[in-house]
Image 1 (spheres, rainbow, N blue to C red):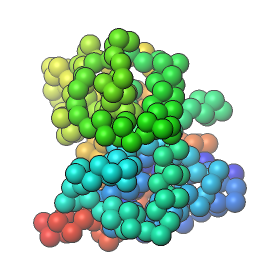
Image 2: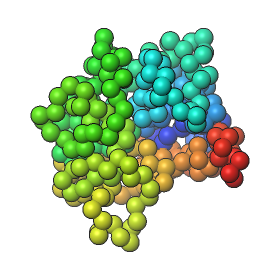
Image 3: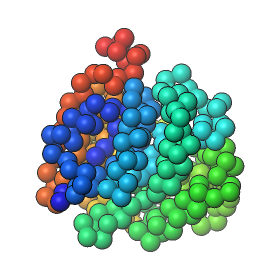
Length: 284
């Protein structure tokens, strides 16, 4: 039995299957983790979603920002649909309701005591240790799975508030928590989020910059954790400071990356090009 953690797939179904063939993944005995963003921008999001749902207990998936975007649109927030979205096949599928319900019950955080690993899609703010992160994950999961789901998803979008406080309430609190789990890359030394900053870190200037990758701050409360995350295609595969970044940008022409948890061996499959968005293919 082996356990593989894989980065953002975003509809790259062919590459996913080729990578699983490369590692000889056996769904009868092996387990597949994913850092989220199963869907969107790639051409086969429906197939990816169906595949992970079919794995049942052999798959562990945390929610990413594109997964949350799909849920928001599916629950009536169609005004947020973007020209580059590739969600229509899911929204029009005969098994749409079953897929959306399955996705709605995925967690924001997964912690495995055996591997001593924690998995999120994007990151943790500086103030959160594992206990606080778990409490916040449970808080948003209960709302997402409950009767206020539609209202929560309607209030999901936005970059405010930018800093954690126990005094945050209602939608602002839930939005901040969701943004950390699904969108965080950079923050400053006081934990203020810089959600608009998306490019790769400049390693030569990083000591001079106010905003740094969340995992570079030595005083973060989660320093004792080993954390697997995705979300950061411009960062690429990254292993340092107790974290493993697995988003190597397959949907943008990069690669799909898997980490075998038993021995930390890395497997990488270059993008075949078939999953790329049409506008990317034209530019290329």
